[in-house]
Amino acid sequence: MRETRHGMQDARALSADTLPLHLRRPFITESSNVKEIEAQNFRTKDRRQDSHAHVTKQMAPALDISPVEEVQDVLSNPLKQKPQLICASAPKGPDPEIPLISARLEGVKHKILVLSGKGGVGKSTFTSLLGHAFATNPDTTVGIMDTDICGPSIPKMMGVENETIHISAAGWSPVWVMDNLGVMSIQFMLPNKDDAIIWRVGEMDFLLVDTPPGTSDEHLSVNTFLKESGIDGAVLVTTPQETSLLDVRKEIDFCRKAGIRILGLAENMSGYVCHSCKHVNRIFRATTGGAKKLAEEQGIPYLGAVPLDPRIGIACDYGESYFDSFPDSPACTAFMGVVKGVAEQLGLDIDKVLPPGE
Image (cartoon, rainbow, N blue to C red; front, side):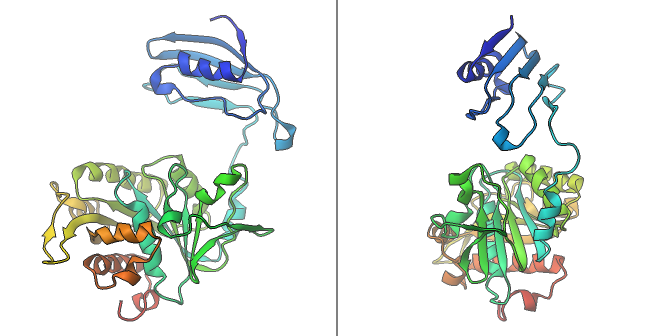
């Protein structure tokens, strides 16, 4: 293909029409800072590509960044080699924000990731329940950080989706659900997409980090930022069926490779308890043994099974605490068992974590 010059619209069309389906993604954003694109040597044959794209104009000086001298994307064999992005102005070495974030998190005693291998297993619901459970002790301060950039749902579940966060010289102030339970979510930043997200944490007993499903860049970034300040570990969430267990195995492998301690594996939606006769109906069959067997095979703690209760979903829809509304329900009892298991893994006195009688 002969050398051509394209505007923003043509450049997007070039990336969409020239690359194969599995590589198509916009490489030009809506930013007006990119003034000119010079594209050359795009050749397509089957699934093999040789491509070069040169950015010839500087980015906006207002961004206070160096000009992007050259972006070269070499895709010799997509089946064997991941696309590599080489940027002449990219920063080298550790992210300079890591020390700042570590300093801000010094007041947090325990930092816990909540992970799942796939979506739809109730991970965010599980995170919100963990937050409410720890917050049942009025002497315990809890924070939930929602890092799911694709579908942040924690604000809705906590009843604060329409709240506004405030900024000061020290950073963003979280939205407080109650006196001892605060929330920070990427959703609160959506009207201000260009603002950096720095949470003014302060003193806190537990910070629960709700992550996107899978093992994506978000997990690596969160792990990188939190590792310096000390991650206590991760709680993994799955449902009983094998399709979910297959993905949580990958999550276990991710944690081990990333050096993240696994606090335990919890099985969500393990069965439906009839409110009238108390019979347990195994809606999702554990055909291969469920989370308990997987935990035994992998040598990780098993935190327990939480049954399905439609009232959990209703409580989340209205941003209410399930524990306050249905303290004697089978799901509430089971979930408190999970909380106790996490506390034991952290070496905490359960009587100091939960109020008496829980």
